Structures are given as C-alpha cells and as structure tokens.
Image 1 (cartoon, rainbow, N blue to C red):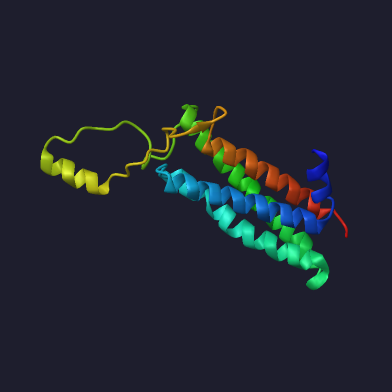
Image 2 (cartoon, rainbow, N blue to C red; image 1 turned 120 degrees about the horizontal axis):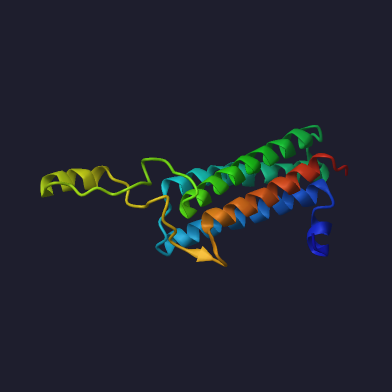
Amino acid sequence: MDGLTKSLTSTRFGSALTIAIIAAATIAGAWAFQLHGFAPCELCLKQRPAYYAGVPLAAVLAYVASGRGPQGVLTAGFLGLALIFVANSALGVYHAGVEWGWWVGPQDCTGALTAAPNVTDFLKELQATKVVRCDEVQLRILGLSLAGWNAIISAALAAVAARAINQSE
C-alpha cells in the first residue's frame, strides 16, 4: 500500500470511510457507463447489490468508529463487509472468465444465438430474449473488462475490511 492508503486505513474509521468512498465511486462509475450506452448484462447487474449493501454499511461503520455508536458492532460489520466483497470478487472472476471463454456462463445470457424460423416466431423470441450478452465484452480498460475491474476492486475492499477486523481505535 502506498503511504496515503496506509494512513487512511490505519484506523477503523479510516478503513470504513475508504470502503464507503471507493465502493460509492465504483457503483457511480457503473451507472455512468450505463448512461453512456454500455448496458449491463445479467451478471453485471448481479454484481451491483454488493455495492448497494456495502456503501451504507461502511458509512454506518465510519459513524460508529468515530465514537458515536456502539463499538461492539464494528467487528461484525467489518466481517460482513469482507464477506460481501469476497463473494462479489468471486462473482467478478466468474463473469470475467465467462467473457474470456474459460467456462460457460448462465444460459439466459450466453451461448449460441439461433435464428427464428419465421417473422412471427422472431418477434415472440425478441420479446423474451435478453439483448445484452454476458459473454461479450462491451468495453475493456487497460485490458480488463468491467467485470475484471470489479473483481479487483471488490478484492481490495474485502482486504481493507478484513484488516479492519483486528484493528483497534
């Protein structure tokens, strides 16, 4: 860790605040990409609840760690954050693996596309078919898809939370 990150995460308050800010920035980034035309696939959407839960939990932990709440909840809260983001990192790795073709993804958003035999069947199929595929990358940044970046960011947030479990104020 660099000096700034180390000093920010040297206390439980700093760790919670760091997690809240990075998680909020990450989900805001996902929303921004979506607003700019990068529609999320089904697996992308399944990675978002970790942030929806993690941001407010980290904010509550920052409040508690500042001495304004019951200190007994900190260990359980940081354990919860660590578990949330470890699971999300695993989901990000799974999704990135689907994108790279390392393994098969869910049938509802991956696999071969089949042509409909006639226009009526095509229109029915179009209404039931998800357009955004989980195995096709829409955007890579420095060689990684957004799923790959989610795996890395979630792993880092889990590490910060796990480290905070044993910290004292």
